[in-house]
Amino acid sequence: MSVLNASVAGMIKKPYISPSFSYVPLEETLQIAPKKNRLFIGIPKETSFQENRIALTPDAVSVLVNDGHDVAVEHGAGDGSFYFDNDYSEAGAHIVYDKPQLFRATTIIKSAPISDEEAGLLQPNQVVISPIHMPLLKAEIMEQLIAKKIIAIAFESIKDDAGTYPIVRSMSEIAGNYAILAAARYLGNPDNGKGVLLGGISGVPPARVLIIGAGVVGEFAARAAFGLGASVAIFDNSIYRLMRLQNNIGHRCFTSVLEPVTLAEELRIADVAVGALKPVNGITPVVVTDQMVSNMKAGSVIIDVSMDRGGCFETSRLTSHEKPTFKKYDVIHYCVPNIASGVSRTASRAISNVLMPILQQAADMGGVEDIILAKSGIRRGVYMYKGCVTNAPIAKRFNFKYTDLDLLLASQS
Image (cartoon, rainbow, N blue to C red; front, side, top):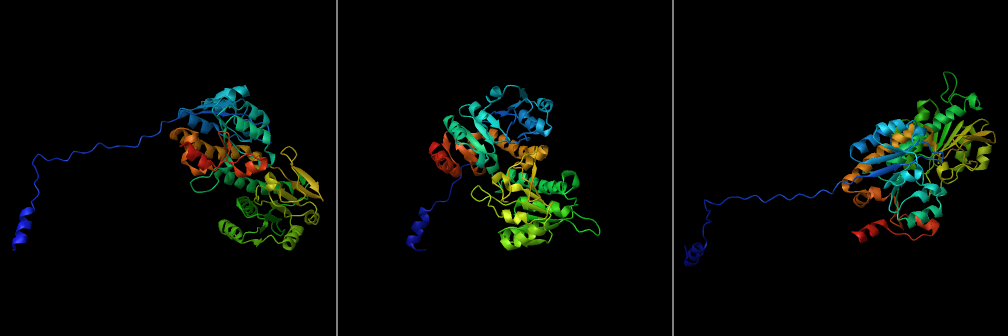
């Protein structure tokens, strides 16, 4: 060993471990969970928009009450869905007979858009979860929401963790099924139809059903029509949606893009035409002209599911559940805008299944403002936040100042 190596070796000391040495564990630090917030939820009785649904069923109310929340239900609010005051009372809700008193709740849950009367009853800084109908939305209502610094959430715009719109999908599934059942009814003699059985029988061909739109409504209309034995043709401008629909239903059928000549020919021989197109910029495009309808068979049936956003038949006009049909060119038109309200109990359960877990999460996170901050899917539904309009189409329509919600929340954090 050289002198240098010897000196280096002398400088390196072996580690010395004291017999008293011991590992002392550090105290574990856990993230402090936000304090659970107790919600005060009010459910008013709907008196407009032909609305029979209710946003929370008695079962959902029972879950929320057992979690420590207060729920007030206006007298008769669930009658349209055959959920009665006694059902809500047994679930732990308070039955309120005075509407202004109900609107003292901090969170208002509705199954119909905010009406003129309700806008006047809202309290400053309330949270309102309801749908919005863009064609019927009024600037006066928006001005009151702004003045009262309301947090308003459109539940049809809420996205879930899978990236879908759960309430819209549920209502679309209902509308697709209901459209075919309504068509089968109005083809029959009791409702002044021409007496055709939708599915036909042995030796008698089935009715021809034409569906315009290959989205969720179109898919479930096709499923129902095939289930009843009808012959089905589907039109849409998206090849992808047509392929997806055929794959989902597992049934080969006539499909075509929206080419006017082909569409007019299929309409001429159709017994039923279902309009299920998606809106473009909030309005459904009209693809079936007056002339096309005039060439349809006498006694055929049009079900325009797209009436919520204007309708896709030029001959369509609004009807109601009380008087759902009219005739033009001897063709029966069914143009009820809120189809899901016709099977309100099923629709109410579907809405409640989405809203109840959201309310639970909001409470667990500390409140509605906290879940808006934490979940981008909930933020998509917010169109008004503490006096700021956070929905660009609404702001543009009424010439209000638009504020980006993400930037607004970032500036407040």
